[in-house]
Image 1: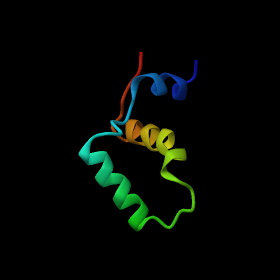
Image 2: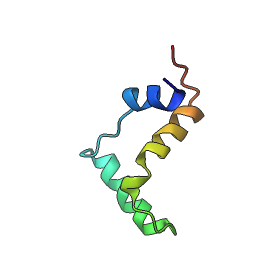
Image 3: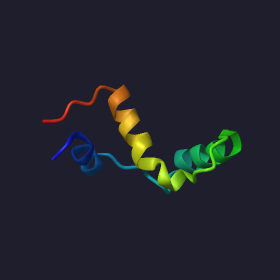
Image 4: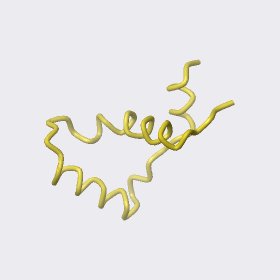
Length: 57
């Protein structure tokens, strides 16, 4: 099992929280990307985990 597979089982977004709804709104407002946010969430979680230096067993 690689690093990404381990993270996928540990990290999640709360899609129903107010903060996520605000993030989604801001993403579509300010992003120049043509890719929908739905397809980027795994990459976003991985980058957040790496930036916070999450160490896995």
